[in-house]
Amino acid sequence: MLRYRVLERIALHQTRLHTPGLGLDAKGVALGAKGLVLLPSMDRLVAFLAVYTRERSLEDLMPSLSMRVVRSKLGTREITVEVSAESSDRMDRLSETARLVGGFAFTGTSRHFVQYRDAAAPFGYDATELLSTDAELALYHDRFSQTYDAERTIALRSLLLRLMPHVDPSTRLEPGLRILVAEQGLGPALVHYLVRSRVEGEVCVAEWPPASAFEDAPVRRWVLRVPELPERMRALMHATPGITCFVPAGPGVAVEAGHRHPVELRACPVFDAAGLVLLRGRGDEPWVIDKLPPMGALAAFARVELRASGPDASAATRTIAPDAVRVPLRVTASSRPWRNVTATWIESAQVPLLRRLSYALPHATIAQARVAMTTRGAFVRCPAGIEAIPLGTFFVEVHPNLYVPAGHEVTPAVAPEVLARALGAPASQVLFIGADARAVAVEESAFVPLETALLEAPPWEPLVAEEIDATLEEAALDLKVTSIGMVPTRGVQPPET
Image (cartoon, rainbow, N blue to C red):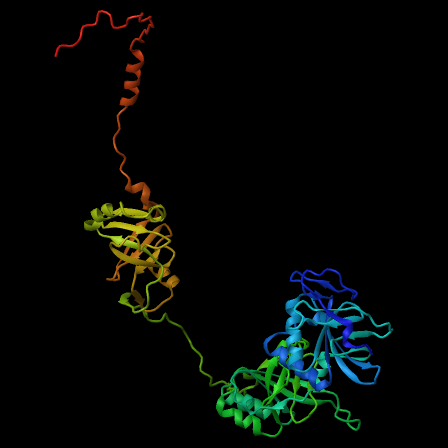
């Protein structure tokens, strides 16, 4: 065994390393292709998994996860957890979790693994002297250097099945899905009890191998899945012999009510969702269903009663059309918030205000709005919202080309498509139902873009072209340059004062 002096701290910007396969990532941290956590015992492994899965899932670690029991030269057995390192962020999480449960974190590539970085060495460690050994693992730590040989592999699924759930009475009171397993003789009575109580759910019958060699018939049990077990029934299901209640703990796995698994099973994607694993408390062996049988609704098991039919059975001799049950349409005020207000009905007296308001409207509103001028006023539609035009009566489009006043609703409360079918307007008509329950129809072709209908083009005269022609017809000026002589001011009289 070598002493801790074989490790040296890596300095900032150091590029030369001795450990095979060890390199520097983008942060300058020493990192190999793999990460390794050394744990002293099996209970520390369970604690490591419990702490890690409390906040994170093992899904990203599963492709490279490997757990083994290793044996040192001194004969001590320890546990190793190997994963793909990928980044220093992942290794930081593994190192912090290992430190919490009393383990050590290493990084390397093949057989040689050096201690992962800590507060004393922010960029990691490097081994200056490597052990000459044929062992499968060589670990270098500032406290020790040791070689290990692998004894056996630990399968995560097998480990989770062997762990006994802890007693936790709080899970009995948790709402949500419940899985009930009833013995064969109690199953039919339980199903009929739930049907009479109007409890919804699904049921199937599962088979297990015989309990002993002296039996040749398989063991059958009724498996019921109840989405929400009424609170009054929970104590009964937990206390009745022959009925075992389970709480789902993840896809394809459930734990007996009143217990909790030490590891967060939802973070361990090792169970097949098509099957079901039922983990029981008190040290009992789990019930495993490799493939869940088809399940039927509980309502299908209700008692069926047939009415006696004979020659005295009543039969109709003729049929008549039923009386009409039609009621007039009404439009009433509603307290619901206004949504999708896309049209307004501006009466004729308010159309001049629309002309004055058009100078203040944004371009987006003018470009998207369409208007139809009628004898009853102007009808303006804008798919993006009509709130920018605060005039008239606002309308909400409840169906294509069917509008009702904003803040109102029609009664009877029929579906919009039923209302449109009852009005019987063709597709080319746009219907506006007023507060008095009277409908007004406007042709779809009557709606034109608002920007086309608003602008009145100013008059213009072709004067610019005539002025240019007159200017071109004037004679050109003839400029001459002559000498001014030696005395340019000769003969010039001074101005009178």
